Amino acid sequence: MPTVTMTVNGRAVSGEAEPRTLLVQFLRDTLGLTGTHIGCDTSQCGACVVHLDGLSVKSCSMLAVQAEGAAVTTIEGLSNGELQPMQAAFREHHGLQCGFCTPGMVMSAIDLVNQNPTPSEHDIREWLDGNICRCTGYHNIVKAIKAGAEAMAAGGKR
Ligand code: FES
Ligand code: FES
Image (cartoon, rainbow, N blue to C red; front, side):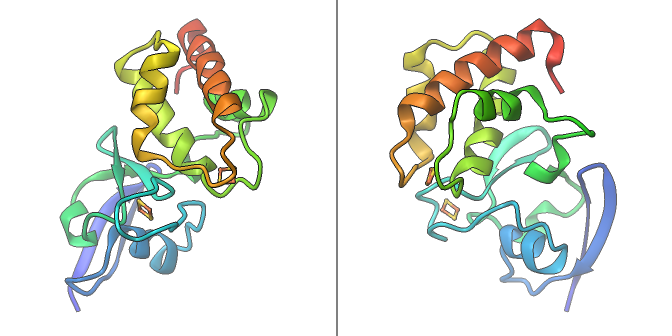
């Protein structure tokens, strides 16, 4: 089996992966980073979003070998003792119910704010097109992302 090497949450890691192993499987099964969820496995729901070289990707829609040499950040890599501002905003504004979609929502939201520091409600709703919340908690998710964007702009960006 080929060995894949990448940086995950700032740490160099390597592990065996079949050529058909998905990045999300490598993160969850090989590295034990189960904060990245699998909701559909067919690129529909966004539960599996991570950052690859700083940009959000659906980790069920790429192979682990395609991330060879890349820098991956998962939800586990965001906090450094205290919650990243977007995570804190989700908590404060009740942007989650069962929490299954939340890691993907947070990772997507941070990428949005990195690209557009002052997103409108319309921008946020459009960006979340690829993230599904089965609890339909969109109202509070949008509120949380707006607040998270403000907190990141105020200097809490990580
Ligand atoms: Fe990847 Fe649903 S598990 S988009
Ligand atoms: Fe339950 Fe979104 S909070 S799926």
